[in-house]
Image 1 (cartoon, rainbow, N blue to C red):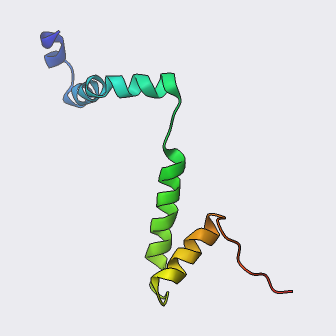
Image 2 (image 1 turned 45 degrees about the horizontal axis):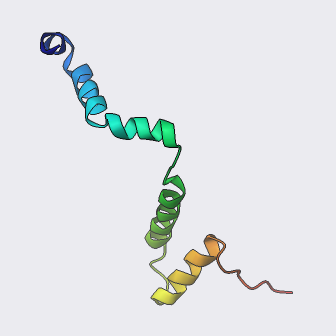
Amino acid sequence: MQALNKALPKWFRKKLYFLKKYKQGIQNAFELRYSNGVTEGMNNKIKLIKRVSYGYRNFYHLRDRICIIHGLIFAPTEA
């Protein structure tokens, strides 16, 4: 097996090493179907808001904006 690995291109050996290293995690991803994608998406939105929110007066306004975007509180509407 080691001789076979030496015959492979370096870029392919790196991919093969990655698959061997994370074999258990990859198998679990296909078998269990659990994902942290929703949480990662929320974190990404929060980081985006932080990048464009330098004009907010204080942390509470930033927190309220995050809650409004995620639908946790509703912005008042004018009648």
